Image: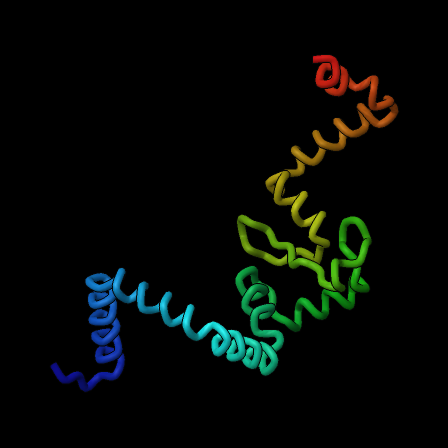
Length: 156
């Protein structure tokens, strides 16, 4: 089935590859695992060389998923002076996490791992954050031993 159109030829080849993979999936996976086991050092060396040659490749790919580029990340990092947009602390190892709106994937700012995880835990919902603030304020002035949850947990 000769194709004059290179796109059709490529698609036909991909279709054949998918069909072959589906039919021989377990055999192919077993060969791949065996290769990885027997060539572990070679694969490790290849990966190290690639990362040395392309130090920002994984960072760029991760940022791109959420609408950032390395340039926009760097600009935001400089603008925030390398500090978290919420708590004002420097990131772990000098790196900050790119925050984005989960509904639109629009970049918002750079956060430390703790603040980024906290926002995710509150599902980016301001109402949840307000309730958490009220909760913290409620127990802020009490001693730990006066807290009802502490009392029931230690007396049971």
